[in-house]
Length: 157
Image 1 (tube, rainbow, N blue to C red):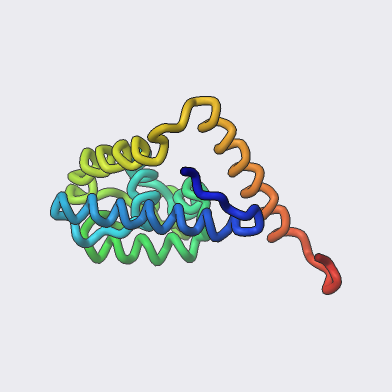
Image 2 (cartoon, rainbow, N blue to C red; image 1 turned 90 degrees about the horizontal axis):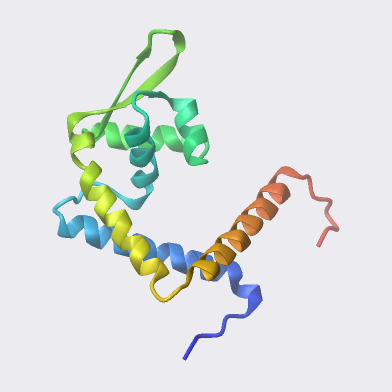
């Protein structure tokens, strides 16, 4: 029997999905002996797997997060030995972020965990429904980004 969700609970449902995905990720990392990474580090590491070194601002843009948020994530990853910051030889004001050997060493583990997570997420969901789900989620994200960037009058609903 399928659960019924009130459409007014969409944000709670999205939050619950994120919470369950994070639990899956933490458990999977722990099972592989990786206890010093958090789900929030995944996007940063994935971006660095695609391109390293990279400027901090470009990294923030690549993962859709604010630069100050990414700076905190990088600081933690650097303290734990997964990446390092270095001066950008082409721009004295910028810093580059690069993977270390330890960071590179988790690439295969992270790919395997991501694959298992996606298998679990899409289990029993056909391709048309997957695309429809992604289309709706993109629209919701776009709507919320628009609202965040548009000043609201005090009497707006």
